[in-house]
Length: 375
Image 1 (cartoon, rainbow, N blue to C red):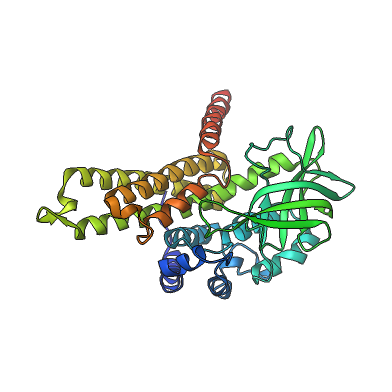
Image 2 (cartoon, rainbow, N blue to C red):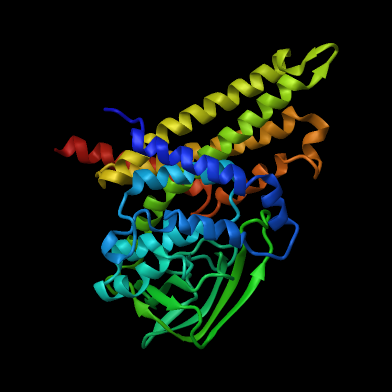
């Protein structure tokens, strides 16, 4: 089985690298970090013009109808440059939710706008520091209206629509499509470790909403959506991990101590070698995930958890050791090391914590083994 990307996909990678190197360098990232702007509007506009927001959307709905492999290629390059845009919320989550669960009417209404960048989407699940479950969820839906608070919501301050999971009854929850410009919506920004990706608190007070997919099927739908998005986020993490590793290597090659490059010292060699191993393992698992996502394979749940766990660990390892390789300089504001460390911590929580994904990986492997043994 060939896990390498095709020639056309690698051409797309080259295009993405050239564009992002010019438009999303560290100066552009710092501009968002040090200002009140929620995202880089010029960068977002450029992505829309290149068709990236419509990569997985069929041409019938205004997209360019490529596929998830192409989106994986783009995701890696976005992670490599820490692109400060709402791309992941709008494309990996909101667009994918509509593609998977939306009615024909909902797709016709929103997918063309998402593809054209006229609308930004997000998904709202969290309700504070606790892990949301069907039992403890506070946001409720009654007679087509939502009440409650979601916090934090990635890009919730700039999104036009949100896919919200809400409790219908004590035993059921559904996904709801909400126009965030409707009555009964109040939004306020919240601070996070990585201000280059904005987050918000969204309060619903009798806000009109329509069911996305089947009523009462919110949890299995959300799990499927998160599995698919986890692979795309994992590619972002792999891109960030590789950029961190290369930054550490380049600094070690150029920094001299005692008359020779610090890259020649055994302690530094071990750091970079450990980074390389973590990154290579994560990339391998992401190839597996990309295949499962693009083919909608039965192995997708296991592949998603595998990619998520290994990519999260790799990005954390590489961003942390990049700081250590830079020594005292690595902790300063002037160096870019902290930009990658911030993003690694943010991405490690955006679909649930690492321990949660490890538990799911073990459970899914055990279930897969049971299924195979019973055949």
